[in-house]
Length: 343
Image 1 (cartoon, one colour):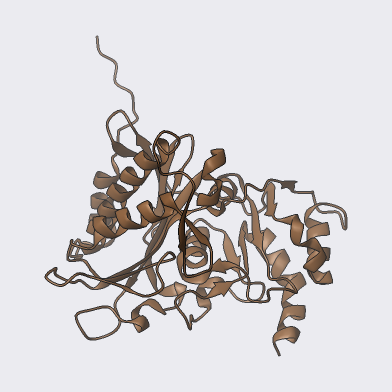
Image 2 (image 1 turned 45 degrees about the vertical axis):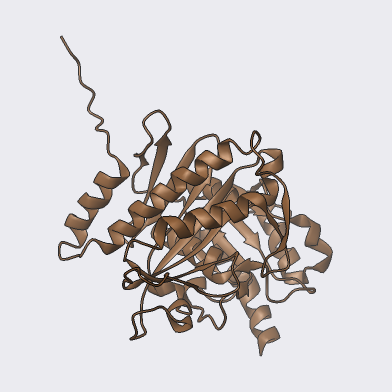
């Protein structure tokens, strides 16, 4: 007698199709196609990351990216994979990458579509030499300009206007987590069959977290209200239960842990850098959409990140993201001081 389990195997492709039928029966399938292409790119990058210690893809190139950082070999490779996997499908009007100074046009001769893709091809890649998890982050926007090709105005939209966002984490297992505004869902890559399988349906992050992820080396450059906030998180002031400090230094890894377990990731501005460090379009916006869809929140210290209107392609921002109550504490303690600084 054969016994069947009640758990069905759901591939990412099947899930995307079912979600489209459920929530957008009139959809053309273009957004679904972009998500398939992203899943394919993720498999290709995962393969390169897994073999990074064996192949000549570790370490730095001689090139400096738009942010003045030395590009890692794997960064360049991941960037190329993302572009080649998505530039010919006829679904995008343009792309933008953290690794490229300008908009990436769709090559002549290829059809264009009504969506824009913005991405960080390999976040945290400076950690890959020491086997720390790295990730890919992506954001999808709908085109707003009239011509067939994407323009800067298409990219410089508030995060609230994203139609999809997500990330892939290349860790002990490879996971792709995404949202199209209908909740957050996670898929784990089964390397034996080469398929992403639904492993974390409808992810909800706890309202109060367990973890605090922040780089304390900037303590001397923090204003007093920020130092006071960190003391409260640590249980040194007030009667709040202290958060456990967990900081990998790889944004995707820290965010992923806190999304599932609850917690706050903070990369605040400091006296030396009032603009913050993280990129609004490639990192903060897509993860903020994930956080809000999972019941969490994301602010720049004053405003919801998703309500910030971008003015440049590589704009930076402070970021407090994670469990809703932990983010609200930051807003309550920091907003009055930051508002007066900006006045």
